[in-house]
Length: 288
Image 1 (cartoon, rainbow, N blue to C red):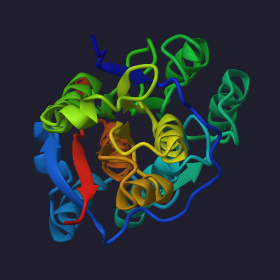
Image 2: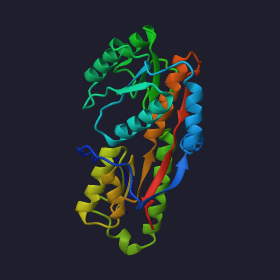
Image 3: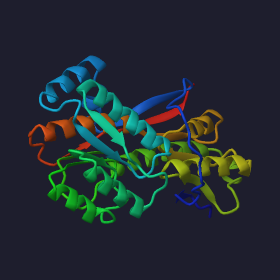
Image 4: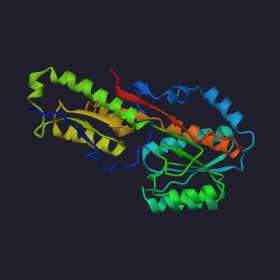
C-alpha cells in the first residue's frame, strides 16, 4: 500500500542572505486573514493619512528599537523595510538592532541596549515565549512600550502583528492536497512514488522551504509535491523552475509598518488593549 506522507521541516538548509522581495513570474492567488484586507491592501495615501494622525506628539527625537530574531533572513529585512517606511511617514526614528544570528543572549543584549539608548518603544520578534521575557519585563517596568511582530513573548504588550500560523498551515495543506489528488489520478505516477513513499514535502520556514525544493530538484522526481512557507528569491526561483508548487508568503512589511504605527500611538498615550492582528498570507504560485 502506497503511503502519502507530508514531511515538515525535515530538510532545513543553511541559506545565505537574500535580496529582493519578489519576481514578476510569480502571482499571489489567495489571501488569509481579515487584517490583511484592511492593512496590506490599504493604499499608500490612506497609510500616510493614518500615520499623520498617529504622530501628533512623537517627533524626530522619538526613538523606536526594532529587534528581530536576526538581521540577515529576508523575512526580517522586509519587515524592517516596512518599519522604516512608517518611520519616514511619522517623522520618528526606528533603529534596527537585531543580532546577526538567532541567539537568545544576543537578543537580550539588544533589548538592554535599546533601553540604555533611550528607546521609548521596542518592536520585537521574540526568539521564543520565555527566552527574553525577563529583559522585556524590565524594559516594560522602565516605561518602554512593547509591540510584538511575528512572534510574541510571555510579557504583556500594547499590540501584536503576526501571521495566524494555524490558518496559514491549513491553506498550505489544502494546496498540497489538491495537487496530490490530481497526481493520484494517474496510476503510472502513483507507482513511481519515491522509495520511501513520500509524495509531499512541506517546508515550514524560509530555510526548510529552500531545502525541500532543492531536495526535490536533486531527486530528479517530478511527482513529489513541495509546498513552502515564507518568500525569498531562492524560493520563487524554485517555484518558477517547477520544483515547488507554491509558498505561503507572509507579509512582514505590513508587520513592520503597522508595528511602528502602533508604537507611536502607544507612546502618545493611546491604549491599544493588547490587540492581536493577523497580517495574513498569500499563496504564491508559478505564473501560468
